[in-house]
Image (cartoon, rainbow, N blue to C red; front, side, top):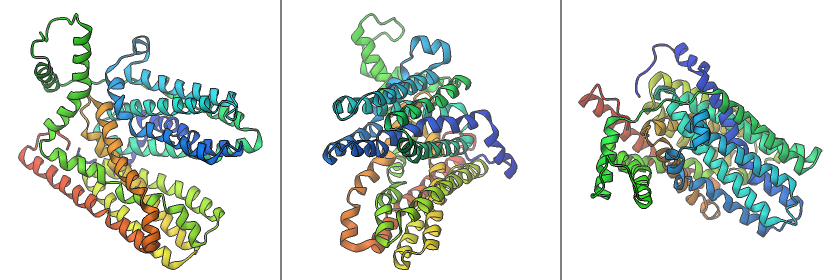
Length: 460
């Protein structure tokens, strides 16, 4: 993973590779449904005078994205017979997810939420579930499609497509609803999912072989769980088939991760859970902070949303190049430092007041560092997976990456009320120190592995 290319031009050339280009469109397909079952949908419901209490319950739909690791083993191991023969395992699951999103959005557009609110909610859950399933399969494809050195570029293009889709599903859907109506807007969003479907039909299925070491581990685990089972004989009992499938699909991915990384696996999991703690903790308070400071909604939209979007994309793009050029570990440490330091800039802005140049500086630094860090960290997480269990392991990592931050962010308002904004942002910056230290530990551990076994390609 720490292989580096000899020139910057070679590192930049990675963005022209077909599978890297395809991630732009797959990222668009992944990002489009998110706001359509969150803030955009909330605006639709509120305009129809659905109660705020009822709209609040729709927020629970977001839990679907955080628990996708529960059905990731199914996506990882279950082959869809007809589609598998036609387009391959990963692409067939992507296609099923995309068709589920389209169906849900079309049905949402065709019913009146005021008369069928529960049905409308069920369709929103269908969209979220299909979207999370699509995410699982796209993540697995991204990891399996190219060598580890290109994962930073893959994640950068994914982020670009994802952010553009959120702009379309947010501002674009609102604009369409204003010009026409909400049903037409959602039908247009459903039609845009064809971008993902067409991309899936054009890309190639990645070739993934299961290593002999993995097969040996699976046989040992199956034998420990089912000691009387003849591993070479066909299974006649349905219960035995279920037990064997559960062992291989659910238990083996966890056992494999700890076997490959030993005791250091706990350090890795701690890094994953803390790496984005600083920016997620403060992120929920950003818009209230801008408004309380005296910025107008137009200023927030123009600088914070539109300009901020391009800075995020720029950060992700640079992060992808740097990962190709220098490997993943040093950029990952730099990203952790930048994210923590940019929170200090928010404290500076709080003392500066509602100056647009200050907002531009802070938004530039925060979004650029966020895009850079995310690109490097996604590349790191991608390298952690065993390609025999790509979907299961990455779904677990991505859930672990966001859950602690989402939980702590719920207390952000209480902390701001207690200590005010400047100290809150200093507190958020300090929360990034453990991630910096753990990233340094992982880097040192990797260096030690290379000293002990220079030929090893193990990624930890």
